[in-house]
Length: 282
Length: 282
Image (cartoon, rainbow over all chains, first blue to last red; front, side, top):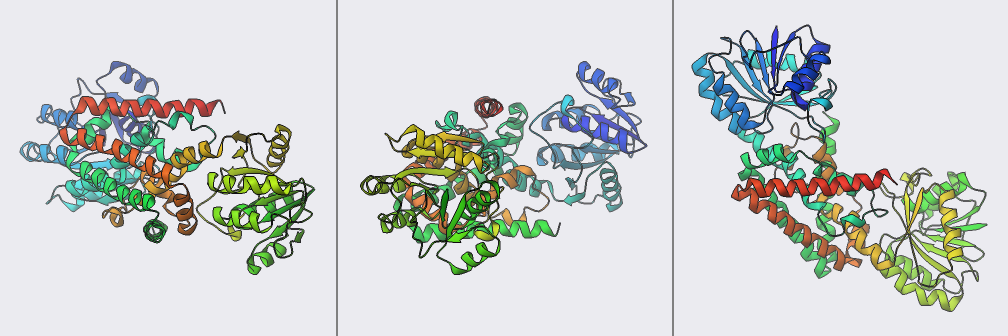
């Protein structure tokens, strides 16, 4: 089939490369930047390119743009999608995208399914894209209520064919709430952690925990600002929850209350061990 | 020379194994637990054992006990150390230990140097010890003012011979303040992070950042309770500082202030990139 890839940054570029290398499908690429299109052509990440981003003739269209740009793209090309085509976005927040395109899809006769690849590196752009980044990763799918299970299954098989190990289905709101905790909060903490006045003196005093704790502070601030603000209710609640828990630790530590502190640390250890148990049965 | 190793848990056990395998020194081990002594004997982690923990005849004594137990041990055996012997502790906090043993060392004619190996895993006890855990690691040394540089150099050569890659010298207070930030705070955050009500549902929604952020919640709560409380002033200040910074993120996110948020994230990215630059010249 003909697969359109709109937006050839880290995720879109990697999708194009993975489809090109691992399947027989034809990749019809598009990126607003001519430099990116030329790079994609040179590296044979796409077989052809769309004209002005028009997705006509594509059986499957993967949109890998920022959230608001995704909505804008679907709106702009609402009448260009092939009837019955499957259109899938890859944005890191799902309510904004899914809620804004649902009616457009129904009115214009294409199928829309939200998706969020749980893969990424602390780099962005086509130059860092690779057909390997999805290997072993989870793809979260957020289909609308009433979506035909056969379509979800077809999409799922497609993503597995380009390297994804497993699918996770959720509503857009469930996705946004969980992602606020498992991913967005981690990026906020990492960014806040590195800003201690002591950080310039870390050399010689850091072990793995410091590096793990600050790794994702190396983020694309433009993209993450949009992701955070689109999800601000869930994310701010998670930050505030963590703040409250940290304040409880600070209090028992200042008070020298060893028994309480030990019980709190034991509880944290047990909750973390439970995560490992689940992982083992993945 | 004869090297005493007092306390054969993860760190002491690993030291004994590393000395035994990588040097010609004789290891005289000791652990209060008979089971540990028997394990150490079976695995040939020590050539001989002390009698009731008495360090007599040892040229170098490495103490790998909890902080208060370290002070108690030095006090109890103050008159047993060989004159001119070098006595080194491995505790993760240095003010409590160094400040309490300084006079004892001077009065009893042995040299004391504080040390903190920046190595460890989320496991404890002799059974997890390995001669490899110090490979490539930094050893922080906190000698008293006035310590002969030749002695510090001798100790430094010894630690390099068992695998350490580099030494970092600091005062005990500098050490405790930096460690509160680079290591202790990471453990507190990790423990607090995992306690969101959402954590049992993480499956399918977690990427590397969630795992990095929570990894060290798997800690030995008895040891870390003591380490935190002995360093409570510096640690509580670091927690409170992080809480303030997180509250600033929460506020701009709730307010939807994109320009400020973007500037905050960019600042965090740049501070984190500076860490990488320093690491490259390690």
